[in-house]
Length: 95
Image 1 (cartoon, one colour):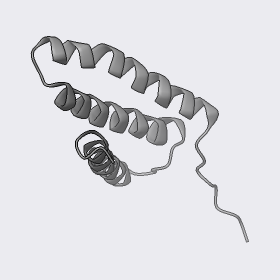
Image 2 (cartoon, helix red, strand yellow; image 1 turned 90 degrees about the vertical axis):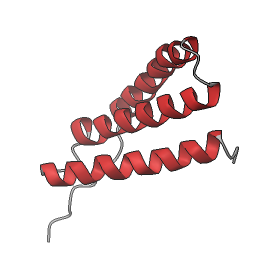
Image 3 (cartoon, one colour; image 1 turned 180 degrees about the vertical axis):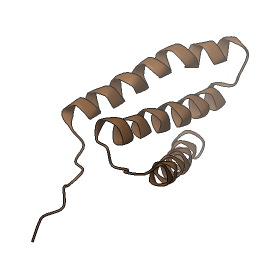
């Protein structure tokens, strides 16, 4: 009996994720705020899109967790929904 391959988060994936998230926050939060957007709204949008985008990239390209396009679509949708809920709770509800 063969053991299925486990999809663990690698050091390379973690580095790419944190670096991309930090760079996205450093660039786009001040940019949106300079256009007059509320601090909370800009933080919510930037973090939701930045974290879901970088996490999706790491899981799908670096760690290769999905084998079909349909699986990749479900991963991206799930990650984006979960990230939006967590960012909303963190930023607006201050949980």
